[in-house]
Image (cartoon, rainbow, N blue to C red):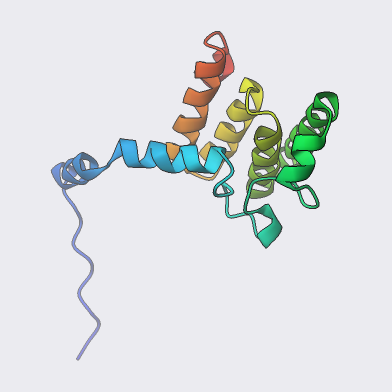
Length: 145
């Protein structure tokens, strides 16, 4: 024996070939499922988060809740996400932003904030999908460009 040989470095054209295999539509579908609450972006944790709602809140409770209360809770989740972002807890911020979007899916700023967290975590395809969602809701939202 001896040590194993060093790994072979790839040529640039090999990376291009890998990029050609990338399925943007599949990634977009995955992001859509995450945004709709089917999967919590960032790998949430507890089982009660699997539907994208904050802990202690069910879909049935959400349907019965006055709209102003839903909006208040969505804003509170967004603010929690902002606080997590400020201290560098990007995964936790993503969970909060996902909760906010599950409550109020028409908030372009929350999509843009979640996109920024995904950029910080180098989840570029998720970041692009969230930025696109922000722009589709508000095409003048320059923060997402």
